[in-house]
Image (tube, rainbow over all chains, first blue to last red; front, side, top):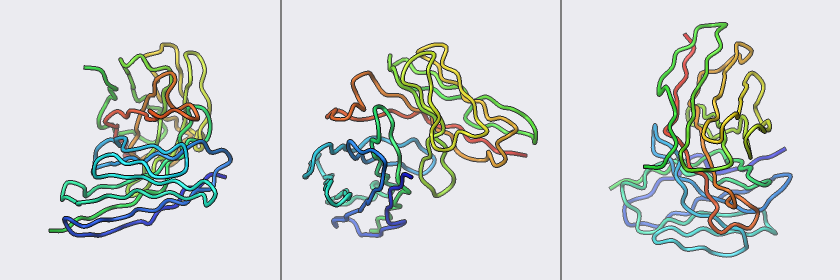
Length: 109
Length: 119
C-alpha cells in the first residue's frame, strides 16, 4: 500500500516558524513534493526534494531523509496568508504522484 | 493564458445517473490526472494518462471511467456504480520531462476543480 502521514492541524502566530512533518510508506519512491491549498482552491506547487537534504525557496524550506522515509516543510516569518492546507506528495513512479493526508495550518495575529 | 480549465464548477447528479466532468489544458502537457478530494482530506488519484490513447487506474478507479482521445482533453465520467460520488474533483497535468524520477522541476498544475453533489 501507499501512505503518507501528516499531522492534521498545526497552529502558530504571525512571524513564527512552523514545521510540518510527513512520513511515507510507498511501493516506489523517487522524491517528495509539497503543495499549498487554500480553502476551495486548487493546490499549488511549493517545493520538491529528489535527494536528501534541505531545499530553500524564500520563506519556505523542505527537507528529505530517504533513510528515515521522512520529510518536512519549514515555513518562516509566518503571515496570515499562509493559513491553508499543506500536502506532501510522493513521486512513486514515472508521472505518478500520491498525496498525503494534509495538514491544516492556522496562523493567528 | 495557458492553463487547465475544468467544467462545470458545480454539478448535481441524481441517483443512477452518469455525469461527465470536462478537463482541457493548453499547456501542451503529455500527462494528465484526475484526483478526488473529500472535505478535510487529502487528494486520492482516480486515473492518470501519460500519453494520448493510454491511461492507467489510480488508487480509487472503481466507478469512474476516462478517455484520452486528444492531448488537450481528459474527461472523467462518474458512473452510477460510484456509490458515494459527492466530492471535489481536481484535474491536473504535467509536462514531458517533469515528474521524472530526478527532475528538479517536479510539479503538476491543477485546474480550479469541480464540485459534484448527489441529490
